[in-house]
Length: 382
Length: 251
Image 1: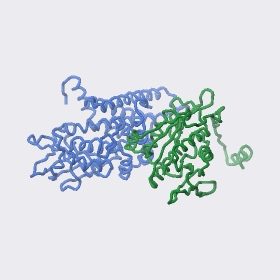
Image 2: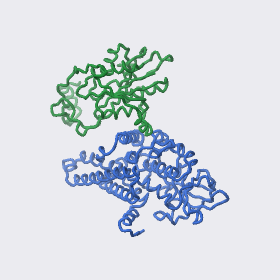
Image 3: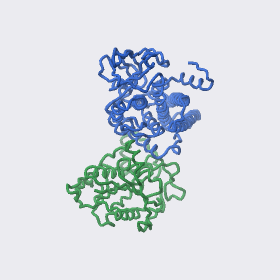
Image 4: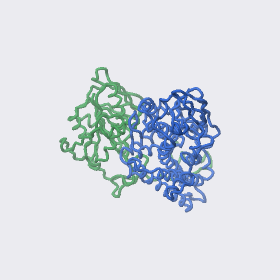
C-alpha cells in the first residue's frame, strides 16, 4: 500500500514480515485492553527480545546489525499496533542502548549491551525535566564529583520505560570544569533513585511513563559514559531515535487508513456504501498520497542514514512531516468512521491520541520547524 | 541426521485473487507469494529433530530465482543450507516435483525428507506419497507428532485420521508430511535473517540431475466459485420450517 516494495531488499522484507507476524499474533489481540487498562505487556518483553528486535540496528554485542531501513520497517510494524510498542523498542534500542554503544567504554558495552539485546536488562533515558523540555541546556539535574565517584541530584520527567528500567541513562550538568552535560548509567536500586508513575495519561496508555527523582545518588566513575560531552551526547541519541519514530508514525497512519477504507466499503448511508461518496474518496486519496510520499521519503533518508550522509535537519524534516501527517490522517479517518470511530474497538482514536505524543516528543513539531528554518536561513529562532 | 525439507511458495491466502485471461491460472499482478503454511510446519519439525539429534537441515525449493526468498526464510529459522532447482511454475505438477525431489535425495542421501502435507494453492496432497513411491521408502503423512527412536533408525509418527489418531512406526529413511498440529513454527529472528544471508543456496538444473520434467497434468480451466445469492427474511417460525422442509429439503 505504501509503495515501497521495490525500494527494499529481501532481508528488509523478511524482517518487516517477521515483525509484522509477531505483532499480529502477540500484540494486536491484546492492545485494546492494554490501552484501556493503562498497561504495557511486560510479559511479552522476552518474546520480542527473542525475535531480536532490541538493539537490532546496532553492530556487535549480541545485536542483529540490520540496516536502518530494516529497523525502520520493524518500528513501522510495531506502531501499526500501537505507538506504545514502538516507544518501548525505540527507548531501549535507539536511546538507552545506542547511548552506551555510541558513548560508552568497551567495558560498559560488554557489560550491558548483550543483556539489553536479550531483554534481560531494560533501559530508559533521562533527559527531559519537569521545567526543561525543548530547552535541555537549562537542565537542573547536576552531578558533583565526590571522591572518585559522582553524586547526582535532580528530577527527570516523561521517561518511557522508567518503571521497568534496570538502568537509566541520566544526563546531568557537571559544570564547565568537568565538560558540562555528561551521561551516566544509573542502576536501579541505587540509594536515592526513585521512580514514580505518571498516571492519568490520555495518550500512550499502553506504555510505561514515569518520573525519576535523584537525591544524592552515588554513581561510580566507571558508570559515566566517557565519550559524551555536552548536549551533543543526548542529541545524537535523540536524532537516532527520531528516525524510528518517523517510520512508526507511518505505521499508525497505515492502520487508520486501512480501517477507514474497510469501513467506508461496508458502511451504508442513503442506501449506498459511503465509499461511493466523493467526499470520502477525496479524504482517502489525500491520505494515501501523504502516506506514500512519507513512505518513500523515509526509505530515501534511511539509505542516507546507512551511508552516514543523513543530516540532523533532514531527520527533523522527516520526523516533523511524518508525525504531523499521521496525526492529521488519523483525525480524518476517525471522522470517516463517524461515531463508531470514537470507540476503543475501532483503534483509530487510540492511534490519534498516541500521535499527540509522538507529535511532541523526540523534539516537538515546533522545534523541528525552527531547526528547518535555521538550516535554511542561518537564523536561529529558538 | 541429515534432513531434506521442501518449501513451496503459494499465492497469499489473504489476497483477493482473479483468474488470468485464459482461465488456466491465477493473475499474479499485484498478488504476493507467501510460504505454504504446512511447509513452515515441515521446516520447524525438521529443525526440532536436528536440534535434538544433531545433523543438518537442507531447505529445498523448486522455482525461479524469486523462490530463494522462501528458502532464505527457512535458513533464517535455522536451516543449514539451501538448494534450488529452477523450473517455472507452469512446468510443474506434483509428479515433476516428486521426481525432482527424488533426484535430490539420490544426490544428498538424507535420512529423512520432511514436506508439508499439501500446498494451500493446488491442495493436491500428492508429493509426499509420490516421492515415497519413487524412493521405495516408507511414508507417514499428516504427522501431528514425531518421536525419533533412540538409535535414530526409526520414527514413531502420530497422524490424524477421521475419528481419531493413528500411530505408525516407520523405519528410516522415510518421507514424513507435516500437518498444522505438528508444531508452531518459530519466528525467524532478526539475527537469524542476517545470518541466513551468508548461508549458501546451491542451484541444480533439473537436466543435470537427470530428471525427466515432462508434465503429466495440465490445468485446462479454472472457475471462480459462484457468487453467493442474497438471503431472504421470513415472517414466522412456521414460514421458516415450511421453507426448510419444502424448498431446501433440509428437514
